[in-house]
Length: 409
Ligand code: FEO
Image (tube, rainbow, N blue to C red):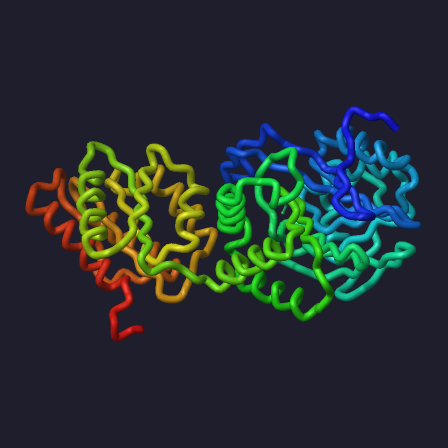
């Protein structure tokens, strides 16, 4: 049937029927300059099956893509791998049109869909770990992936075509007409995959690591990973690559040489101290990422921290407390729980009346599991030449603590 929007075949028996969100600029606090996609997949078998839906505003576009392949009312089953509204927003309206025989979700998914759409008459059937659903020639197997990203999250695996529908895992916020990783710039893919992991999955890294183990133990051939955001992974090397990235990120592997220095400034004093500390870090052998909050999004901080070994935060004192941009950044980073083995940190800034603030930042970093081997560094009012030399030495001393010595290797 001729429709405005078309499906895109992704394998012998599966079509992509999602939506491309070119306009998305923010995903619950995470800046998304490259937009996103909400992926949904249509499996063509004796029992045509839809995996996930899209945000409510893209309902008609999705329906149009489905109608380009089959009459939507022929869909027998709908699988909801995750109830967050970017995947279920269109569900109630679509169900009225499609009228599937069954909708399946995890036990938490059944509850969440009920809570999200209390006035709809959607009946959802619970599936559990390892349950299978016969579609005709092919079978779906369900793997629970609770907390990757919400308690209800699950993966679905299609035998035959060997596709792992991984929902939020292995995804990225990247709008593109291309549907496969191997059609895109590898640098952009790496960068957006890391940004997505840092801002969405980092808080549940232990669970991500266990889920990866479960997928390996599942032992079925994976010819394609089809996440719900961004492109699919279909080349064997790409599948191994993203699995390796997830392994490293979920295990908290980092580069001890990489320092992230976040700061803001009121009259320029904290910026001066930041520059001197960065000088000392660099002279001590570190690679420094300077992130002034005048031009840094909080999601960029998370991405840079994902593989960093040293985190420094500099704030001027305002009304006896944190500078607002620093408060925002620290609240966000703390929520991501970037607890890793051996990560080090520092806190610094300028004050007028009381030096308590930098100590307070140091305590916040300690609460995040970040050790401050050189304590905090602060200067009253404007740093002079001696203060800047001390700041440079503070940076150099932190570099010495961060970098492995020959006796460590
Ligand atoms: Fe893509 Fe957790 O929603």
